View 1: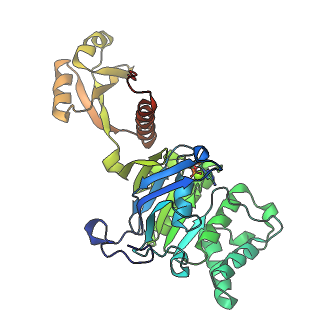
View 2: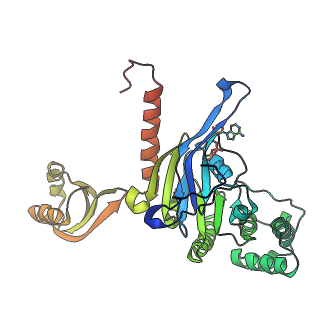
View 3: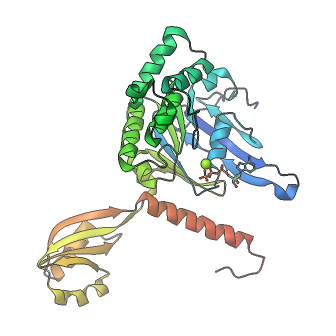
Length: 339
Ligand SMILES: Nc1ncnc2c1ncn2[C@@H]1O[C@H](COP(=O)(O)OP(=O)(O)OP(=O)(O)O)[C@@H](O)[C@H]1O
Ligand SMILES: [Mg+2]
């Protein structure tokens, strides 16, 4: 099938056409010699559903920006293709109008005023006159920098520059926003403000693809995530699907220090104890009833039981570590024991 055609079976799960879908997307940056080629991405099948925030994660150099540039049609795949709402003509003005893009470390000339930058980008999308003025006001309001409309960018703080970048990505009122590291270098309050803006955009029906190293942010805001390592997508799914329930945290009353010796044979660890109140940890797979029974054997009263879910950071480290080990084992000379 040609890249220019619409996919006849372009539907993803539940018959919904994905906002972004890549088909075995592969990129090799060619060096002067074949030995200098860089394989940045291999057979990527990414699916971003309409109206969701997708967190695109991976260590430095794993291929996130390369993917984004191919979705935007800024660089061409070595093989595979991309569809945006089922449309494979990535280079067309029709598709480009539907996507807003905040590049990694976006830089805008210091000697321009906030509104001048937005007008410049608006004109690139064919906007002009009153309509352009309206859009500039609307996006400045949306990202909370209307007060700095006429100020030179030189006087903008880092957080304000990030907001003008976001406003630039929004100027054409796109359906999809692709943000390459939108909160890098921002203080916690600015990060929260940007996060609220992004959540508001999702609630207004936009689709967001966000590449980020800020895993706490991603965990707070993303509906689904994909984890990339050395150009290969290792995991993709909702946080509920991907994060394992680790263990149970059980708070008990009636604690006595001499009980500490009786815990290890039962697979329980003591986290903390203050007076008669203690916090215990029981391994994953222990049901609530079993936890209560174990406590009863120890003559402890259960005050609360809470399953502890793995954090996104723990998942990320686990996935990347195991991918790294597999990659090292595959690279080891045949016959060598890589255990
Ligand atoms: N223009 C290029 N020419 C050659 N190699 C490139 C080029 N751009 C990227 N690469 C290589 O492709 C791989 C993926 O890079 P990419 O920038 O996509 O990673 P990334 O996941 O965005 O990393 P980061 O988190 O550091 O932004 C890296 O090995 C990088 O060195
Ligand atoms: Mg990058």
